[in-house]
Length: 163
Image (cartoon, rainbow, N blue to C red):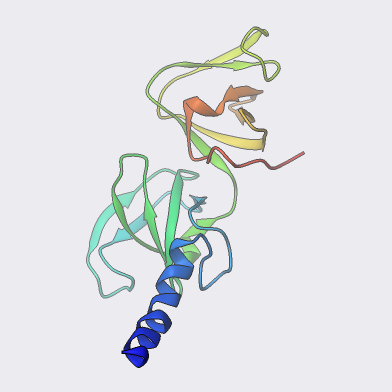
């Protein structure tokens, strides 16, 4: 019985390491967000080119959530919840976010009472400059300002980065 218990613990460690938040290939946190490096990126049903294409994304900079790694492949989720595998060469570390369901205000400062710089429609991709606890500074089409994290898909609540 002791031998079987030991074997179960040893077998559980690699899977557990990935679910605890560290990618076995990169050592980077899981889950995390990256963005599409190209205007056309295939999402496959498995981790390899032999697997059929499930979906083709056609939006440069679209954020995807990486939640698993296997060799050169990343298991990703899009903003609609679709999952599949992408080759790591198709992904970049540029931080972007997608505006969620409603038009949101881009504010001059990280405060909803400050001047509105622009209004951003749903499904627009923003380039993130930095993020604080509740707000991210972003740019889009020549505008820069602050948007509440609650209105974005592509940034985790605990993400704090940038300037």
